[in-house]
Length: 236
Image (cartoon, rainbow, N blue to C red; front, side):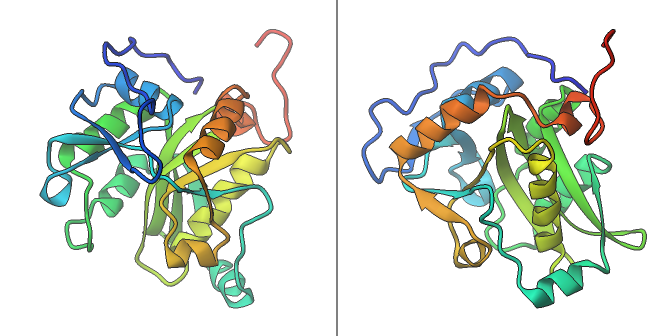
């Protein structure tokens, strides 16, 4: 589905004035599709400041930022073996992946009903996407986020089977790499686990430079309605 541009936001969302090392750069606004898209295009993302992600909405621009770049994904030999027993799909169960990520039993949960509904709306408009991981017919992992040009802003991932989140990440990288164009996978913050998979950190200035370059590119073929390795017809 070709993304549909929503009405523009009345809010000014910018990292201007953010101090080096400062992650939280704004409070308030709303979670309308146009607001969230404007935020990502400016290097921001929403996360509630209250318990469990409750309001008020905070707008974040981590400095440094955790990113995965082409060629950096590292999976151990044992993880590669483990993921062979799992099956992956793309955009087949977006709501279920968000639900898995929002499981209130997870430590550090922040995905509220309002956040979930906001990204479901973006999915219906063609901006938000998911990768699902299955063991036979059971959903055992996944990742979801927002695709703007060659930026994929990863929001959250979950797993209910060993290495399922690694399988999701590997499939996401495969989708981003299908056309051979450079891409940027934003993971917000680097954690020890993500560092072991190849995630590096970049300062805010460097991230914003990469962001401007990547959002100006075309979406991966998969999300422009073009089969991998295919092309549009002359009448498309």
